Image (cartoon, rainbow, N blue to C red; front, side, top):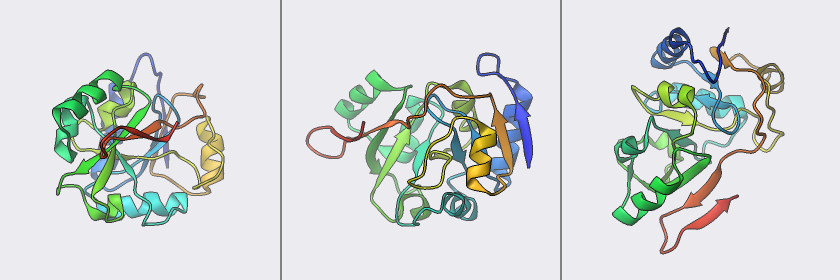
Length: 193
């Protein structure tokens, strides 16, 4: 496991390059977002996605969300109407995950076979740059239903496993994951505040 330190304010491009290389080779990366640290894998690599589930001790039937590089890239993985796009544009980039109808390109391994997918564009340069070539998984870096921690050293101890690469920016101020808003119904529905 490699630990690379950088700053949230002055991101080291070499760190991003190395992390994308690890993701492209089927690795799992622990990375910062605008909320908590997340576990990232290339969504098109089924074995890497399964590793994320295994690291979290998460049921394969419980879907993972997808992180894309910017609001425009949401169209790659999800279908959004004009009104949905307007709502999304008001909140992203930011600490929100929006549930939308998924596109066929999104593997079943990510969504647990569901027809919807959670999509996120955090207000965090590192996270968004990691998804610059392909979308990545975004899920809090913790054991499912366990405490969310804000320091990489504590997170790695809780997970008791080796991710392939850690992007360490120090302690994150937030210990709360993104809010989840379902846009697939007639009205937006808050799933997690």
